[in-house]
Image 1 (cartoon, helix red, strand yellow):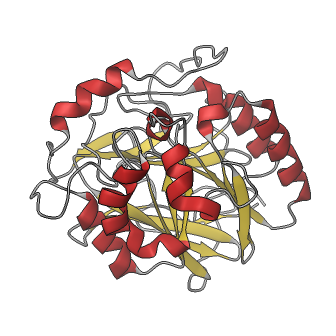
Image 2 (tube, rainbow, N blue to C red):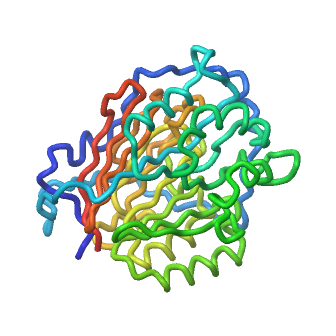
Image 3 (cartoon, one colour):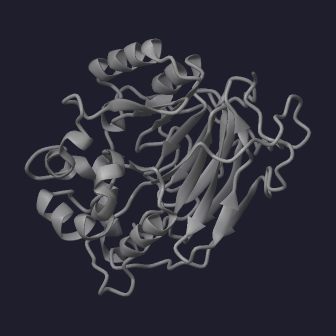
Length: 340
């Protein structure tokens, strides 16, 4: 069945091609540290520039042939976000990660996916214990994390603090990537710091080949497509191609500190409503917001200067989501998609 959004959703293609600026804080306790990231670039092995598509291609799900009817209540819910714990605490008025943690507790999802940069700036174990653990640690037992580039900056060694803090939750098979199942869904947690690692790619191929679930979602830190300050990450194209070949429905990322959703597309940036993957960027977990730099093709919605999390409703045959701000209000509502 082609991947098509529910045409009955009144929020389908909400203001495609427009950017939204939220009312959240544009500055925070880490504003003076933002310059540090300029000298900490993610290694990109043999990556070529992603071919640009002229103009912004708008895709409207309304009227799409084969749109699915409304479905029953969600089979389960999950929360997803990246770029979370700055080195601040609840006593700091501009500190956002205590607020996003409180939001997660109110939403009470079945599980939580974090898309990297869980702890700033160098993700040392003592920083995890002092900051992340005091807020997001409240639901550590149902968190399924992936590492970001900041987790590689630990002076003790790449991912040392991350692995020490999360333990087997993040390394269930002794690797920084893993997968798990819930209901009719297969979730794949990848380490985008090492997309050029043959061992991870070979593991992904085996994992996809062995999957017997109807619906597939993947998440990792560096998004292939982003309109934010970091922009596109072409090193992820081979992974995207493998995921699309296995009928993956959804990919989640962080890295850029804004929210964005994309219409289904392939690894070359071509719109593909039938076989393409929906991407959501959500780097809104607590790190200082970034601005929108260059709007990418097929970007349907962009929101910055807002802290919050993405709440997903996963059904047996589809999914939808909302971006919920720390004030509890819904900042964006997605179309409802069907699994293929």
